[in-house]
Image (cartoon, rainbow, N blue to C red):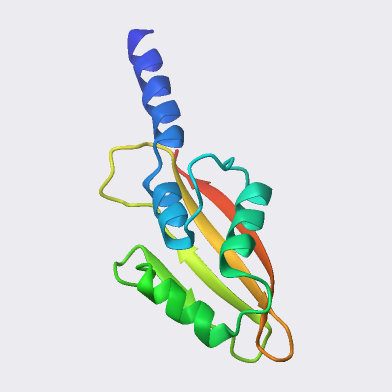
Length: 126
């Protein structure tokens, strides 16, 4: 019973102290006071990047904030579509059993200006 309780506590700790969420907040300058639910994160990221910002400027901002400088994040700019994607992966070197990763969908209009943001998260673990 004690072993099961210990595993549950580790799993819960893994969900709360998430390096991917910390990096997501860093990359997009999301304040700690903003809720970690995907709707709040989406709104905060759009507020930081500003609707109407050209895609080139969004890409430069992401690069300056560290997206793509490690093996745990990457920006995929829009090609034939209106959507760019930022992936923020969990750190496999961490000790958490259950971990989060994030996808940030950046929607651009026909002039390649930012028009919307949508954050998705997924859990990986047993």
